[in-house]
Length: 149
Image (cartoon, rainbow, N blue to C red; front, side, top):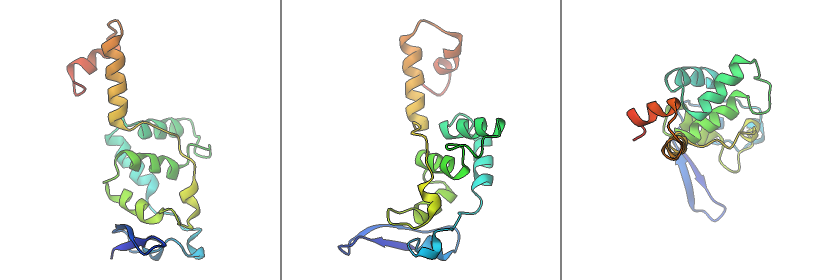
């Protein structure tokens, strides 16, 4: 099934195809969807971040997990998940985020705060720029010999 989101003028704004067959992903606007929670967010982050440790959102996830800060304002799994999907939006469960959180969604977890993190590619450019303009540092060695060139 594909959810179609139409503007008040009757124009198609976007469509999404959720990976989970759930009524609140097909239409997140009814009031009864306000308490909906996307299943599998922690497992998704845990698995994805074990493979992509250098992603900014995965760094935040690890810090939050290592210091038992999951109740902190910016350490809620769903907020970190939103930032992860901002960076890697084409991955499986991220498609469900698009369906769950359009502008007019009534789902409360969609309003969880996120840190304004750079994407992975923005972070790579920032690090490369620092290493290119600074005096030689040992920490810059991976940038000059690896994927950042």
